[in-house]
Image (cartoon, rainbow, N blue to C red; front, side, top):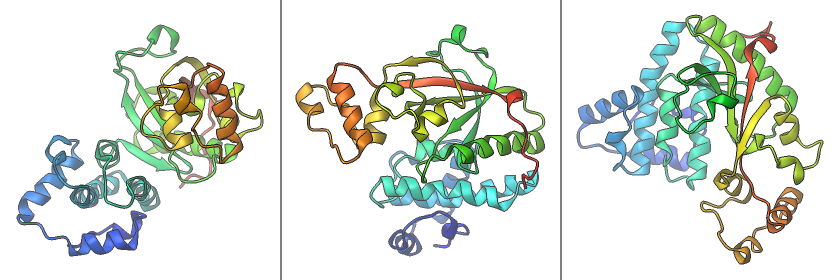
Length: 280
């Protein structure tokens, strides 16, 4: 099977071979699944294998590319956005795509990788958010900031990425009415300073935002910092956490002291970010 953008997906040669050798019993049905996935329908691929999901996502990006061309968005943005497939395939031991609900945002023309960061057009309707503590309201459109696991979190690169994002949305989505970047992540948790060095890239990244409040949701930290897919419930389990890095060691000591990890809800006002003069 042929995939137009397979070389931009960042996937292993082994996966490329498996995809090339993949045979589907009904090509028309396969293409229909890809088109529906590009339009945001994830239900019909739940029972597919991880390899078939990856094939569907790659084919769906061929529909997405047409939307990029209609808007005049540079290919470089498209290729950078497609490359997130490789990250999630590696997270899945190169067995294909498991986190298909996440890649849905990419193929549905909702999320774009611009420089170091990813930016998602989001109509904020999360009923669990404390809107009284936030500078926007339920139902407002925000630009949701995501941090892909693709290298060092350099503060200057992040600043440049935010600046480019303002230019990007001003140019290609002038109809959008938005006033804030939003970030919900363990990286902007309000108590990270208690176990991180003050000059750490994570805290420098946090300083780009206004953190409005934090919640004790620990899954992200255990997943991203310790590589765990579930939260340890007992002190004996916490004692077994790895200490391969200084951050893991200090975070483990912090947790053993009885304090908890969490995620922060943070924003940047669009008006405070100067558009990039050299974007595109």
